[in-house]
Image (cartoon, rainbow, N blue to C red):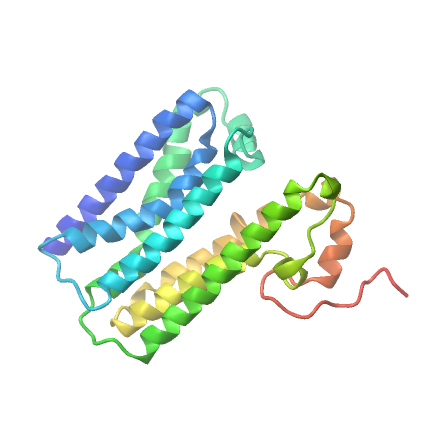
Length: 263
């Protein structure tokens, strides 16, 4: 079946890129470079399907390629810049410590292989949207608007945090300005919006069954690799963070609450 061939080709391409990233991580002794690959995995998966002559392309394939490429390249470039020359991220350093001896080899499947496989599974709404033949309509417009909102939150949130951290006067302080004044994680909220935007494109193309992908991504952002993991011990490193939590929504932006410490 042509669809199966395209799916296996996409999986193979993702695994090749993952293995290449793993080889680079061995030289750097830093597996955090997988963060720079994560968004590119989805662009690669979509590109493989778009290039497959045996798989029909629908009216959404070119718009989706533009949207996915814009987001993937921006995020990958930002993370590469942010992590350049810095020690391995705490998350991966802790994983390394738990899996020694032999983490260098184990990271091939624990980090790079796992993320390549997960990206392949979560790319389903992109594939469904790109290959669906339904004409473009208002649901696509809603998906594009939600994607744009997500990109603004993700991009502006990252830029505001980077500028805040670049000022030595803010060392040890809690970022609570700009978008961070209304949500503790505007970048994660933006990412969720982007994924639900992809979900709307899939619905418009007749691929509502692929909504498991934005559901899983939202759950990961809230409960696994996003908010929960980042805030696990941050209050012990930054005492002011407890007050920030008390007055600021964790995910969905909203009005600031009164400071619980004030009478």
